[in-house]
Length: 306
Length: 306
Image (cartoon, rainbow over all chains, first blue to last red; front, side):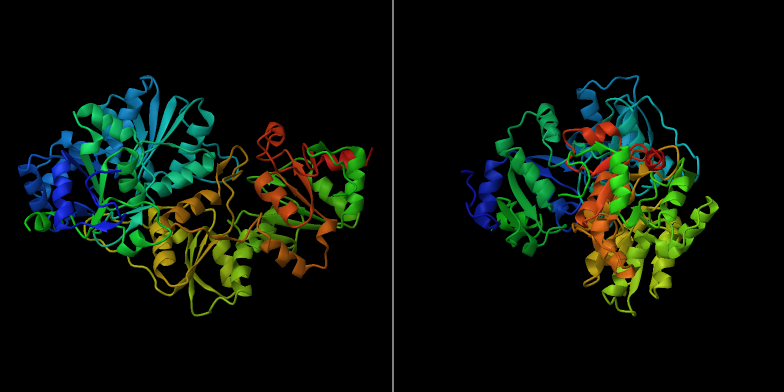
């Protein structure tokens, strides 16, 4: 593939390749956790890099698999970190889940059960869907004794599973009974990230762990709406007048961000500020290679000034 | 394989094959959930069948993947249901986990972290190991905010994951950090059953769901000590003077009980009182076939009286 970038896989970003990259790109798609921030901590040089790219006339889009917040909540988070980002520039897997139901004409009389946090509930409500579960059900316990019968709502037509710090056995059984017993009940996963930088200090179990648990109990694979699935990109392209060949996906995860970029025909830039180390990238067992990689987003500023 | 039983896979038990079966068998291995009981409810005809087999001089062994109880607690449960079964006749996956550590010379100065219930903790303590986690950690919550740093005990040398109705994000992160960050930390699963009859009325997520979640977060497969792994059988054979060719595994799950029986060279009898239906057994996608099947254990009594 001739994209003006070095042919070698795993090439470090240089002054030359940085220049070719920005010249060939109209829109930069950024993952957030591990690229823009870690937990609630901004990564060094992000404001400067974003300012530079905006001044160059590049479109910036933020694509996150983290479903804990809605677009509105993410916009607020950006502002609290001193970055002006509008809701329309943000694509979250929580929003993607709501849009998936909308585009697939999910019947309005059906309900949605949520294993996840507020972001999913908020996006579903904004899209006009009736939903329940979420943090509220994190307080519920069950009595796994004798003749206890677990009731569930027969009008649930979709179960959405995302990252859930309030995950528990009650929700696992609720999700299982809906998916197994309600005819044609959809099983949707926001994403399958095994881990994520939920706090700045360390990694935590990601949405993939909740999805794995529910998937195991129903012996079914979910529909994935977040990265690396193409659903988010299709939706994004419908929203903006863009060509994927003139887009660059910037991320810290090989199996979601870089794979998503590759699956959808974007150029790809891996940054090492998140969960992938240089040795993991260069390990023989890794078969996902970005076009270029660099230590941190901020390198773009330095390299383009050379 | 000529074992005096019909060659056709999925043959229903008849008066003739029931007679050949008991004549060729010295020891019957019974799964419990779905064979002996459902939740806390005894399945019809079990006491009569057990009495008949004991009178015939057959050895009875109870092999359960359910790790919620210890052998002592199971013996108590049998008694409460009117069945006299000694601790020595019971092999649980909780006991198997403790025996696995013992046989592998797990260092006494190391600790064991438990994602599971009392049964595992009790068996570990009986075997002399220091352990923590379990139901106690089910009450713990975490603050997934800002700079929060999750501490874990660096002296944990093994994480055991079993069925856990108190499963939560705290335990998921505890297990993840121990397995990922403590050098050579063992990751042991009691079993991988996706579901189980935890109550008499319906199925619930099984230990396999907790194992799937932890396994996803560490991107590693566990060592499985329960069915269908051969570890339990090796240990059982060491305890009794038995030949597997003269043993029959009786169970309600194809992918654990029947597979365990086949993996270890036993004859196999599937009963339909648990989680497998006749149509699932006969479905073209199923490739695990017991030697014989019957509706319920009690059929043995009726067929042998013909």
